Length: 103
Image (cartoon, rainbow, N blue to C red; front, side):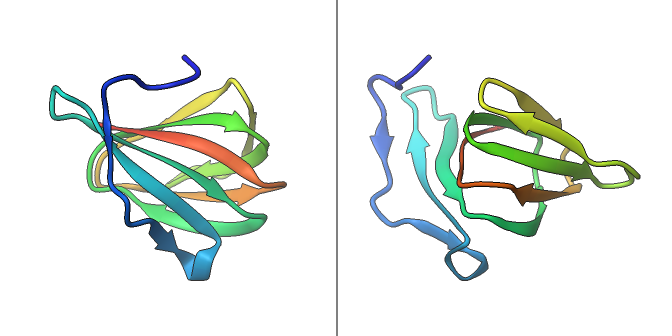
């Protein structure tokens, strides 16, 4: 899916890590939400409150889930899942476009 239909977008950006990650929240009619954003080249650690699926829509990254010992590489068209109340490290090897699916 290259676009979302019949949604509302929160105008205020979510800016994390001094601007290294910028996203916007997208709200769906059924009450679900996603965020659509960009991570600029950097290594960041994110904590999760609820389960997340990170869909990579452009660029390339390395990811290490909490408790893992090895990094895995992901690129456009791939995704990875992160459990609730967990964390992951992500290294954007180039500007990384993503959609974060919550829940």
